[in-house]
Image 1: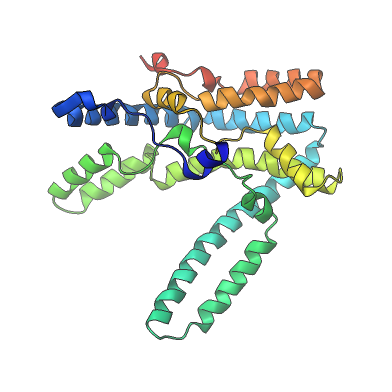
Image 2: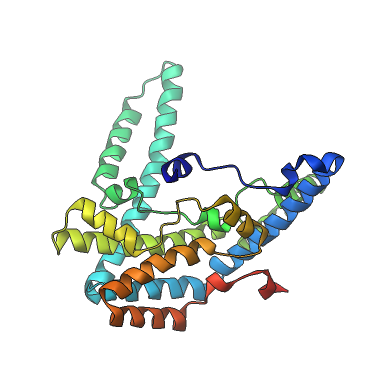
Amino acid sequence: DNAVNLVLGFRKLSIANGKYLGKSSFTVRTAEKIWIETMQFLRIKVALLTPEVVIGNTASNFALLLSEGIPANYIRKMTGEAIKSVRKYQRDVQRLDKVTRYIGIRQAQGKDTRKLESEKARLQAEREANPAHEMIEEGLYTSIVEDLGGQGNTLREQYSDKLLDKLPGEMPHKLMRWASEAYMIPGTKTFHAAQLATQYGDFVGRYVKYHYDMNVRGHTAYQAKHDALAAFIYYDMPQDPVLQAANDYGFVMFTKFFARIQHVVANLFLHNPTKAAAVLAVQQALAPAVMQENIANYA
């Protein structure tokens, strides 16, 4: 079931799907969408727009790696390599997708594609040689999008686009873009940068542990991957539909984090209780307890 949910997902629960609503279905669906989008923005505010969360998460991961017996100098060195590698990998993949499309278009037009084919081969070779390639392909670069929401096609976007279309000139559009960037609205470059910073934090931790286990401790690739996944929260597996709906509606928040951090903590205490207590002390001192966030905090 977990494998099926990971690949296909599931349809989210919605009160607007009730057959008993009749003619009120559209009104209920709109009200529900507005409420869910509001809750999404609050989750984004906590997880992406609060500097203490990103800083605390980074410090917590650093302490966790230290508790695993990995030297601080090794962590610092591999952190830079991890960020550089994953950024280049993402740029290469984006360019490779574009080049592949261009080749298809030019072939359909009967034009020469040798230069593009050469670039494609180079990009594929660089992607394969990238130190982050195997980890990303194996699913160790996980996402937090499902927990936060923030996907496109929101009511805010629809109504703001309609309003802008009625206003003359280019200035209203520019002002809206500047304001959106300043407030890190989902879909903006600043929002994307903040999201990447959060995703990079956990990936860097996995990258450091994976390479240390492989290159220093001599573990197999399979064991190193398994241990790297077990040491940090795995976000990509969907959670229970009812629990996900509770998150969507804002009755609880970050339950995926709360439920899955318990396994990480238990693992720490099982292998080294003293170091586990030190890691939790760092988390308590530096990172807000996001698992306790709920709508009552914003009343």
